[in-house]
Amino acid sequence: MKVWLQANRTIVLGYGASLISAAGYGTGAVVGRKIVDDYASPLVATAMALVLGSLPLLLLSQRHIANEIDNVPRRAWVMMALAGLASAWGVAFMFLAVAEAPVVLVAPIGGVYPLFVIILMYLFLKRSERITWQTILGAVLVVGGVAAITVGRE
Image (cartoon, rainbow, N blue to C red):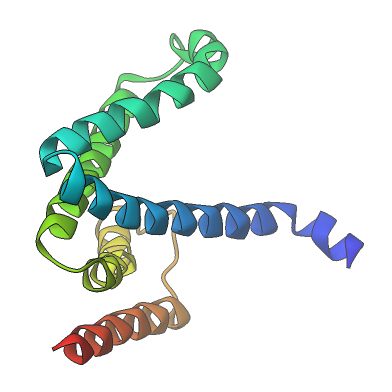
């Protein structure tokens, strides 16, 4: 087992980070509902969540930013800006969604993002990422599960 873990360290780290990401997004949806119900509008909640979430990351990465800022190509800055904007829109619409619909409905619908990932990978990353039938099947199962949850709520 130890040898397998050492040989597959990046895969294990990737899966671990994915699970932590899922826990973070799940927690964010529940906490987001509490915030928009009791404390702030969805747009104010979005702004504060993004600012307060970015500050610790900025503090943790400041040394790396200082070392790398001159070496980052302009195209990378554009891509980072697009990624940031897409993430910000995702957070904003998550807060808007939980303000209007039950979290148990919003969270699974937000979980169909693998379908968007696959479509965008196919359009933009054909050369660097391979889409297998297992990946497509997984996305179809996710979407099917979301459909079952959505239909089951009515």
